[in-house]
Length: 277
Length: 325
Image 1 (cartoon, rainbow over the protein chains, first blue to last red):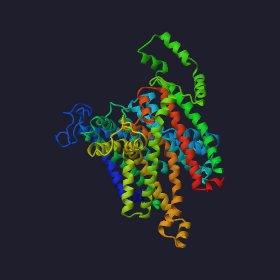
Image 2: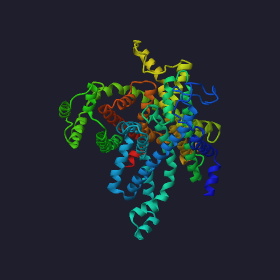
Image 3: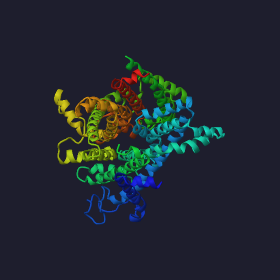
Image 4: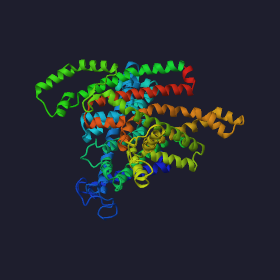
């Protein structure tokens, strides 16, 4: 574990990523203390440029809401959506991939057909359909993002299971008379997990981007202070007050960058021989 | 010929997938509140329950779900996608009007992303771990993390509003009466920003894949042989390494066809392009379920078609794939 940490810390890109992620977590945690007021309430005169008014150091948007407050509270929304959607996607992916890879045969065929169906559909279009059917409540949006993101993790888990299921330790478990569920989740899964966990960072990055795109199209929950909502709101005043859209965009960029760098750093630290690739 | 057979077999294998998608979506949309008749009546400004019942019988909505599903699938076989209550014409017609714009956008973005990603990946791999590599890899990471719609908006601010070099949106100058080459140039000029926006994320992915696979192929024995027989570095890279390093990129192209179609929803909305993606967005907002289902069907077909082409391309690049079976 210590060796792992040391390898991770020796990689400057991974450290930068970790700092970025920690900064976003810091923003999310401190939001209610730094900006105790409702970030969606009227704070001052609309469209004040950043630095113009010392009270609003990132300025105000076209409805007079404090942009800095929305950025801080938005960090909570984005992180929460990213985390929950990723957990949903990973859990579905692991269960389907594990069962499919462990049993093989017709079970594998059926499950892989379903996975293929999900992969054939453009995930953003499927997301639009889900939102059209179930509405844009923040809970549904998060679940929907999870539902459209699981296929790659299922394939990854399945591949790991295929290579692990006939190893000696699994055969030993069989001889011991363990039940399938026990073998799958207690014995094989821990060995199959590392690449899936690393892939989780990709899912999380994409989940944050998906939510912001949805919010930008006004199809996400308008009652939460999300970064995408703010970019969408700034669209109307893009020609002159471009900062309204620019600021949250930079924050999304840095967050997604941080998450991807951490994922890459984890990958490099777990597979030291592949470094430099 | 063998290539074609192989690709056709793959194509046939995608039919059950398509069926699964359609059945799944049909059942999913049964869960949606309200049906076509509700939408129609809302459009007419209300109506009595007796008429609603009559309309339901007329549209066959009173039948059991399974029967409706069967009818729906039968209609799809004849490419009848139903009628759009919002646009007042058959869905197939609405989609066909919008399809060329999206196809043009996707094809341009894909070619640009692939070519630029390949070139940058090769440069990065040739100078691995030196400053050109660091610069290119960092750029790739930043591009990957940028929300495409935001990049498009900033592009509008810089290139359309500040510099007025490029138009801020639209597919062509409306009412300019352009024809022939002027029209083509006009459309190309309008598509510069959207294509760059859509291509950005994919460029980053191709760049990373290309760099990794170049590095991998460069260590193989046949490269050493090529060098040993006295070939110059450029010849080694272009004739021997590149072709082999292209394979993962081509695979990715098929995998990403779907994502790109999704990305065009956002890009078309940013630049007000009258394409399929924008139609998808509009039909969600207007609850035009028939059109939405039609779009999903067409985009699934599109993804399957692109994968078919990619299979053919793949076999062309690596003959072992065909002979191996």
